[in-house]
Length: 194
Image (spheres, rainbow, N blue to C red):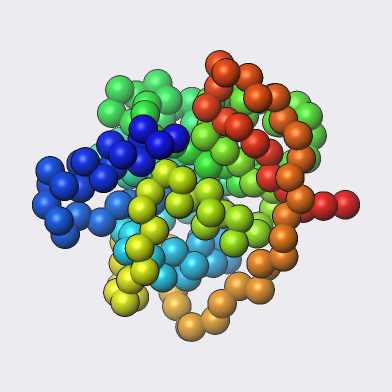
């Protein structure tokens, strides 16, 4: 976790001071993409958006981000397939991946641990917790730039449009236990309390 953040900061220093960390958001729900984009625009990040799995894989391979946030269940590229492909590619294997899912089953938790995701959160999202997790992997500096959203060439622009509204899903999420196996980088499971 800290190693990747340090490598991102070193890469930014080598590529120039103006390089912003990039986050790729992959979700088939335009409202989730829009909410992520609105929340992340407050930080000095370049936000890339893809509306389905294969689009996210292609974008990550051609323009490797510093962090990937992906939904688990999507048409045209399931989230587990996105994680597998990114972990298999030499260019993207070290990129931390955060998975968003509404599935609370043990089977899914085990699958995500086996895939080696950095972390995952249950939907509905706690954006406060998500920001805290993102901050473990990239530098979240405040930004006055509201135009830091970059859509992929075939992206539905309605998914990242801005009307100034903020999400109201900042309720605290209860932490649920998950194996702390040293074989996987994932250390926790986040979800809403019962």
